[in-house]
Length: 252
Image (cartoon, rainbow, N blue to C red; front, side, top):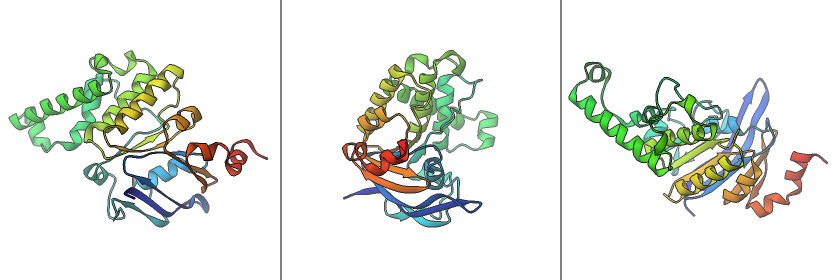
């Protein structure tokens, strides 16, 4: 069984409160795994530890069997890990193509002097970044908004633009933090198709999500957290009828 990422006994505390408490699971290559749980369960904290925004207290994270301890957040791009955030982070003064290009610039090799002087090397990489960004927008079937600005597009499209930017590094592992938050039914259905389209390219996906319809329809496996602990893991059919999960969401 090929594991792309393994979470082993991960623990993270804030002021004596364990936000993540001895959590272990793994994501297989070319798998869509969902991470669910009530608000405050520790899901986003776990994401932030995986992506090196928070330091862990205990445990380890292995990516392709390599310990991620030495890595800094910017190193994750180099090894093929990309993520989105709960809060949309688009630049209002840039059009959609330029916003997506921001993700593509992580792969450029020009320095600040090249960019300031508009040297040929910089122009060549700018053109390449624009072509790459447009290709991704076409892949997600939203290239018709490439010249629009964030204020001119619906909320659901903004979510897709953030995903497009995350795809610029051509990740092998994509982490989505509540991608359906704020979406209506039509937008959620479009997001579901987008997730499958990305997965069909061989990208492994780990997503935090509260929309249970989306989770049950796209996930191969689901991890459930409550009060920082993992309380269940398995396919959607198992999770739907798990007593611990029902108790965590609905009480006794």
